[in-house]
Length: 248
Ligand code: ADP
Image: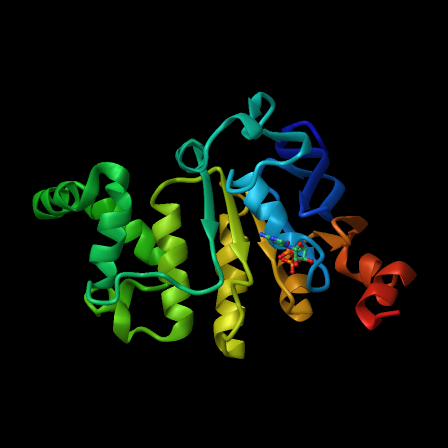
């Protein structure tokens, strides 16, 4: 269904590092409101792809479009973040000496900074939005807890909440359930599924059970290009996919 258009469009993207092709004519489209999982062996180009989308790496050639009209290759990393592309790296980065609610308040004030955040917080203007983010991230009962005292999973959810505070159109998540307990992984699946529709998501993940529980469509990268795309069952049955995972 393409009636709602694409949030992200990569066509023939190439990136080389010292003559090595990390992305080799990568083409990929993500629909508005879709939750796409990207899998692939180490070195497949997953991180480089996210670096290209977020403007950290400029491609040697190819098109990278956000929505129908925004050519991301013409923008810098900070501009791209402000346009509504949020990225979460594998390790959680929250302000450990601040409470959960204060972390969210700081994220809500965006680049207006810590003083604006304090002022908003004292005046209570962000109260509803903080409450909403606490509900989404399942952290309502921990709002006054220092972020440093949260479990690993809770820190990851808080960081997702901090990204959501910027109201991103597209969220890029790198291995969101790495190091989580089974119960935390299950909660993360619910959390991410609840974001579908309102946000578009690209999730890079190795945990196949988790991938199967969240994604309708899975993209397999190998050697810098798309090797297969479809449901998890479809790509797992693909002989070329089996081959790259088993090694040659
Ligand atoms: P993945 O995230 O799928 O494991 P990467 O995008 O990190 O794959 O890497 C793809 C390939 O590009 C790897 O072979 C890696 O060694 C190489 N590579 C990535 N970044 C750089 C860099 N800054 N300089 C040189 N080689 C790089």
